[in-house]
Image (cartoon, rainbow, N blue to C red):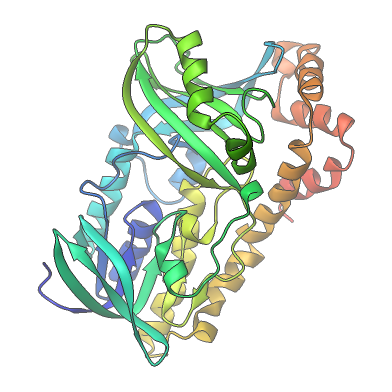
Length: 395
């Protein structure tokens, strides 16, 4: 248990977003407590673990231990079994999230953050209708911690958001049902991420194979929430795929969970509370990727929190609102446009997907590119053109 019962900030959730926020706030002289409900930070993994290299370099020079494999290409399989392979414009990484997440928490601790695992927050302290701290269990002992500000970095489930009165509910069409296995004893191209798109195999989503080296890979599937209720579960779909493709595989680990695929949450702050990362729905609604976007939201939120608290300003909804405004004016705009693209792509039939891959394969292999895939999509759905153009130019 902790020596003090009062902190400037309590951060709930020690994923990349939570640890990033905590480190930034503490480096500016604020007292920060970082709480993680799991016994080990970064485990079990609930993520495909892929990031774009240049995005990661915005925050840290990667340690070699963070990177399982370097990705240069991706392979897209159509429903009819045909595929096209496309070179990335830049390098991607498949991370070891257990090491990565733990190191981010260690960095936070090195900047003065108090870090604690096995700390389950089950309630907020509220006084005069304002959040003034958290309560919960740590190693089966009840605790109450007062703070000027509480940060919800507690993932897609975000109990902090709900307990603070923020509407975090997702429509079934905006949440993916995810199931992933890390398996070994298989043969994969170590520099290629593979995606299967098929309304029969992965309705409203896709199946992925992310190589981790040494004949290992993350093999996972994300399907729409509606499909998981009305049809075959993500677990059953993935198990059938793996058993067919890799009959001699060995399972190292299994992860399951919801994937937010929505627009940014309408309310990211309230009196004494800020939401970041998956809790604030800062994920890419097309790919489901959220590591870097979560860290970007954490950075924006931390800078506002430091400005407010260091100047003795009340952390009210109004005074924290700059974080929400900054997000909506930057990454939020991009996410909204990607969401519209997702809706259009989800209308593609298996026949459309077959056509797209066939059209790309008619080109010389050195001409295969992401832009050619989008051109093939646009030829089928012309309405994509405007939104795709806006995404690429950053509007």
